[in-house]
Amino acid sequence: MKGILGLLQQKAQPDPVEGHLDSKLFATTFLGGGEAGMLVPWEARAVEVGATRLPAERGTRQLQALWAKDKLMSRLDLDAVSRMEPYIDYATVAAGRELIRQDEQGNFMVVLLKGSVAVDRLQPWGERLHLTEAVPGDMLGEMSLLDGGVRFSVCTTLTDCEIAVLSADAMDQMLSADPALTASLVTVLARKLSMRLRVVSARLGEKK
Image 1 (cartoon, helix red, strand yellow):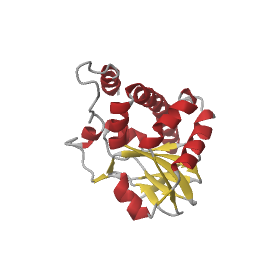
Image 2 (cartoon, one colour):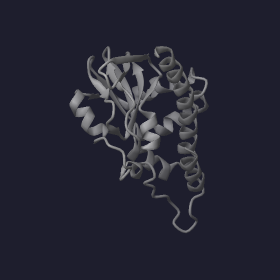
Image 3 (tube, one colour):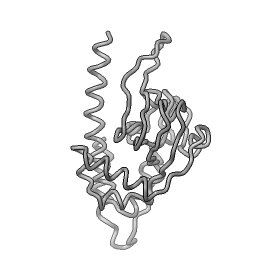
């Protein structure tokens, strides 16, 4: 994670000769990573789950409202979230659809805007361990987006849901156009992820 933040800091200083950035930092994380798992981009998963596009303006308003209530995500103010709009796909997904599958390699993260999503861990002996139920404002899949690793859990919509999706390619586009915004986003995502991992670890410990 420190490596990514370091590269972001470097890219926050535009090359005076080129005058622009052309980054593939996030997308190339998924090339030759050495971990098993089929790469599943959002475009493919969207077709599979029958996602329908949600108006960007509406999705941005929802995201702004949810993140404004979150202690960490509120560090991205309303203007910052508005600047992210061109890089985010907003969609609706029906109940009973798997947004994320365990052990696949996915290059996108999801923010739940409306509805609820079950987050489960499939154990090697066949048990389906229920980790948590995601509610509006929660993020899913950000770990794989940042480190290129395989998915830790399976995430299934329990109700009709509205979501915001940010892909690795979109992160690269954002990094090229607005490196300061990207650095701020990655910083709060990393802190948010750290807090969530602590909660998950505690719950797994209770199940032993």
